[in-house]
Image (cartoon, rainbow, N blue to C red):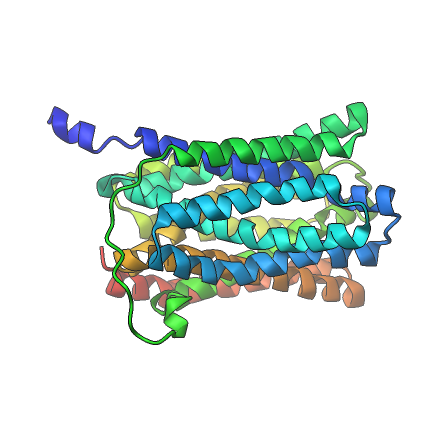
Length: 396
């Protein structure tokens, strides 16, 4: 019994290292992201349209890189793909320090999206590789905590440094060092030996997207679109409609608390193999959060929705990721991971565009009702089709 417990240890040294490396990815990313609009405005006197254009390039290249990264992770030694993409992700932070013009900064920022998209796919795939199979679903749930913790801590650290010394280069340097530490940590991970079997079939869509997971992908697009509407427009909504000038940081802190709490709770059900139940609970909880946000114009609904959506998404993410993984053969884990992230990115992008159009033409209320309606459609599609599709097609 003791040997079995040792074999099935969740927090083995390799998993812990990959977990910490993932924390460093998101810490270095999130310490600079909230400050970039201010940086562009103060340093280069960029207007809002220019800032939006400069920063959107990062999202586009990350989106394009994810399917390619999934293919590379499945087709070549994962250690090589991970360390190469992580090193490139780390290196581009140095570009922020040396960019002397807005054009050069825009190019560096846009190109940085590709290694960011690749390293998140590679790192999460390698985390699955070093997990014991009996605790894989549980480990996926805990893995996401590294994202959530970094996302809740890093923006606060960045803003505190900016308020204290007002020096952007110090913040860029901290991001560079954090990413370098993460890359160094991953260099010490011992990955299980896996034979790479060359796929001699011609390139096809299924090599870049897990076609069998298309129904889960539709649900993720809906979830991502709903979140994209709220997360991108809640700051200006809080200021213009609710009269709150400093509520955004608290909103994301409460959201992160919900995410962390639900991942800790959900890990126990995932340990028992209750993947479907985890997603069932998560999408229904989140749906109530979007309804609350759309229905009431008050600080209580504003912050209450953050907690509820956090609790829901904390169940959805690891449950859905496990579904994608369980629908894929072992040699397509990278493709499975990149498929989920790509669908989320597409949803987020649609949320930004369609939410902005709704606000421009009919106001905030219609945009937030749009988020609720899209989320409802995703929930209905999940219960009517996607859930059963997974149960019938799962490989493990």
